[in-house]
Image (cartoon, rainbow, N blue to C red; front, side, top):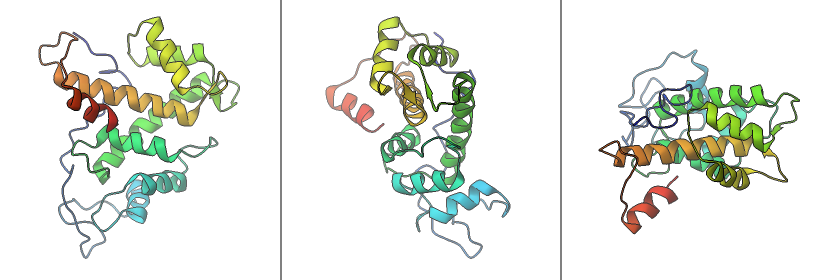
Length: 207
């Protein structure tokens, strides 16, 4: 079966990054051991290293500061700490609660695509979208969800009947991450998986 969100404009992120969970320490050239050297002119490398810890990774608070400094949210309200947590959870395959540079670049690409999509439906530049616009955005990403599921999603991420950019991103991340979890378990590609209770909680609570 074809999974929603894969192969479309927001379905090309690969959470299986080679640097995931690898311990790294700063080297003499300003990078981190175990990680390739990046051009000094790479703005993302500069944003990343400005807040990365000694292990060469960033946690949710550091990601929030990094994205705020980078200005990727544009004129919208900066990302909340909770949204930064779910963004890390989307790529955090070893449950360290941190993100390496490769993951950061993947996240940046996804954020850029999500922002472009949000701006396209936020025609009045209010910084919010209406529920029916949110439904259209989700469907445009390739997700095939029934009306009741779409309604539940909109209720979860709306405030006073509107969806703000921060919540829009949190929704996109959650959809992507949960679809990834489901897809990896569905070895027969039938759209049906079985979870043990603890396993289910670990998968969903980590995102």
